[in-house]
Length: 229
Ligand SMILES: *[C@@H]1O[C@H](CO)[C@@H](O)[C@H](O)[C@H]1NC(C)=O
Ligand SMILES: *[C@@H]1O[C@H](CO)[C@@H](O)[C@H](O)[C@H]1NC(C)=O
Ligand SMILES: *[C@@H]1O[C@H](CO)[C@@H](O)[C@H](O)[C@H]1NC(C)=O
Image (cartoon, rainbow, N blue to C red; front, top):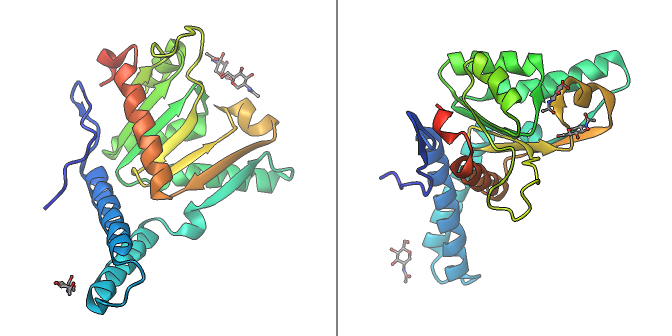
């Protein structure tokens, strides 16, 4: 039995939360059930069988996540720029690697985007049939991405904020609805090569869940939601 996910935003022909997120929602639900069962059982040893069962189940879930996104690689931080050419190359390659590893979806929320190498990886992933979605802060950025057929909504201003001049200034990506990449860096060549910048990577289900909620919320208020295909 597959539980229904709480996200069901549909934009044109693009149905947001698909098989992979249902799988994740299932894992999250199982983890929640596990936590709840632990809370109910407390530290009591009165039902050893039940405890062993949930312990086994928890181990299986952790192993499943570990196989999909090994924590040594997916719970880390990257720092830019690196000062030797080879290191710079390796950090940029590592950043790109995460997007190449995606198997079902890449959802990106970023004010500006001008990073040809990443554009290339995302185009290839999109052509392979992955869901690739952008929310950007400027119509000119959106227009460039749509030229490459990358689905994109724009949110120059958040209509739910009282001050109308506040920008959508996020910088995050959600990969396979299982990992989040976020940090200080503008995803532009200048941002990657010039400043001290950081990117944090996490598969913590609570982090991922919050970013998915934010992405879903922003998608719902995208000014150009109708052209988001
Ligand atoms: C112990 O756990 C099993 C499996 O979850 C359950 O079927 C059983 O009713 C529980 N027994 C008690 C005494 O709680
Ligand atoms: C986005 O970044 C590019 C490259 O740095 C720059 O040329 C462009 O003006 C920026 N666009 C916006 C809307 O800030
Ligand atoms: C990063 O982007 C913001 C706009 O989103 C811009 O104001 C800022 O100057 C950029 N920083 C760098 C280092 O490119």
